[in-house]
Image: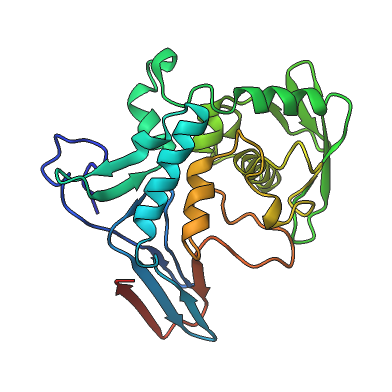
Length: 276
């Protein structure tokens, strides 16, 4: 499937309203999710998967896209970052879609000095790096895999077990797949688990307040720092469920899922609905 270039006005489908859901159907399971990692559109999608259990993922509520757009415009006025530029409008001013920060940044990846949001996380990253020079950062890999303890030495965060992460940039945090957060096929499962939990902690800005990740903070602690990923914050404020950044499925043990994923090893019916 080739989607329209939703951030490129030259694309002939730029003005169209469209949406999608993701799913994988293999011998092990059917896995599906509603994803807002790239964009939120004016066409709400919902999911129902029936198998050994019934899994329901609610669509975007009526009016939510406008409220998300309004929230991002307000955030841009507060901190001067180009959150308002994430709002794509039709010629009549109505909201067609809201794109994620990494998609606004992407055309500037080869011009980092001009890239939008290039400084959005800089101060927060510096404070995190300073804190963990003298404090342990404890990351639970979950699923019985144990806790890894990290400290910053020089400019590198190193965990027990030998996994190290250089200081990230704002691009690394928003994309969750660049620099120290690059997800390489040959990486161990432990490193991938650390990467996911670090990336989630940065996007949600819980690393300064909670040295135990991801089980220390509750969802009410997410996005409290002014440097947070406000796209994700505003999307979650106005949608019942759905990925708003790539590792939004990281959650504290015992807490409900917020990522909008549905999976079942014995699927019998998969329904995709259109409309609020």
